[in-house]
Image 1: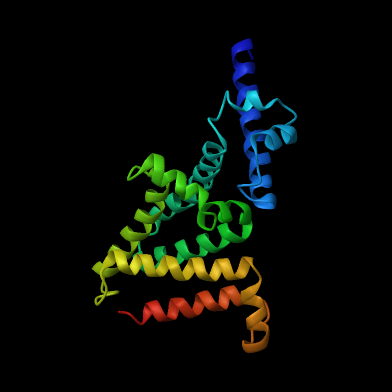
Image 2: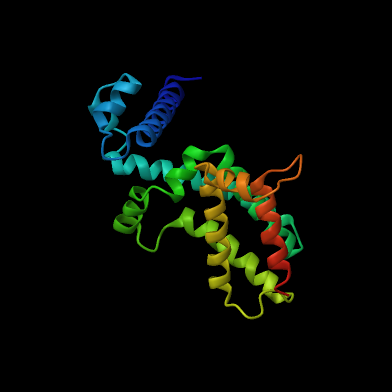
Length: 211
C-alpha cells in the first residue's frame, strides 16, 4: 500500500470514528447538548480537524442518517428477487423489524430524532435520495400487490404510508419497552415467539383479508 492509499485509509477510518462518537453522544446527551468540541474529545482530535470532514454537527447527524438508510436499503434490494409481491411485502416488514431491533441507535436517528429531517428539509428538499429509495421500494411493492388483487379500495401511496406507520409504531413501542409492558398484562404470547412477532402476524392476517 502506497503513501496515498494509506492517507486515504486513515481519512476514512477517522471519519468513521467521528461518526461513531457523534452517534453515541447524540443518543446519550441529545443533539442540542452535543458540541463539536465534545465529539472531538471523544475521538481525541482537535475540533478544527472535524471541519476537514464536516461543516457542522447538522452535517454529521445527516451523514449518520444517510448511513442508516443505506444499510436498510441494501437489505431491501435483495428482496427484488422475491416474485410474489405479497410475500415480498411481508419480507420487507420482517427486515424492517429486524433492522430496528438490531440497530436501535440508527433507527432512532432515522425515524425518531427530528434533527436529521430538519437538515433534509433545509438542504435536500425533494432530493432525499436514500429516504425516497426506501419508501419507493414499499410503494412499488404495494402497487404490485394491488395489481394482483390486494388493497382494491385504497390508493397505493396511502396504503404504503399506513403500513409503514403501523410498522414504525410497533417497532418504536418495542424499543421503548411499552409493547412488552402492555402485552404482559393483556396478551398471551406463545413459547418461542415474541409480542412483536405476534403483532406482525396479526397485521399480516389483516392485510391478507384486504383481497
